[in-house]
Image (cartoon, rainbow, N blue to C red):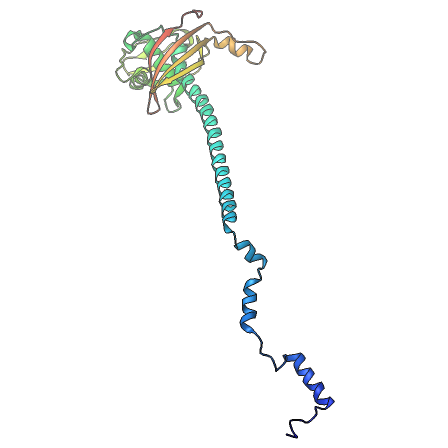
Length: 268
């Protein structure tokens, strides 16, 4: 009993206070469960955001939608622009091709026809030779003593079919006059063609073009080449002597002249 009633000395009191301050009072048990429950009741910022995720899902989905629509818009715009450029380039390229293709016929001022059988034989021969001279590589053909090219009649026949269709035929003969006279050598089945020709009746200028399932209808102006060359560097308008309508069948990038017609109301 004397031990229980022993007074605590000041030194012992000080030591107990230090222990209580560092580790807590030994007379009371910490309420760990209450502390854990309190932790669950104290929301931090992340938990506040997570409480209503629907808004964030909506904004995220909307942002993705905007990005997708922007990409689709860019692709559509690029395709539209590319389509316009492609159409312009295609028409320009095709007009250039048709101009070269028609030059032999326009240069010979072939009379209008609805079928190739209506074309005169001399016109067929002349156009076929011009097609080789203008649109083919003629460097492989041998030259005669006068420096003129010697072109086999077989090549002339093939050229005729290229212009007027595979069913077209011709009778070989000497055609033309002056600088554009082509002599037919019947014995050797050759055409003697001048290597330096300086005159054309007309050159073509395509001013209109429509297409329907591979059939092209071209509006072609006939320009005098000498007059065109003389004023090409001057501020003058070139006036066509006449305007014709050409119908061309185009298949597998190969062209065939189907008909040539006058256009009413145009100068003839």
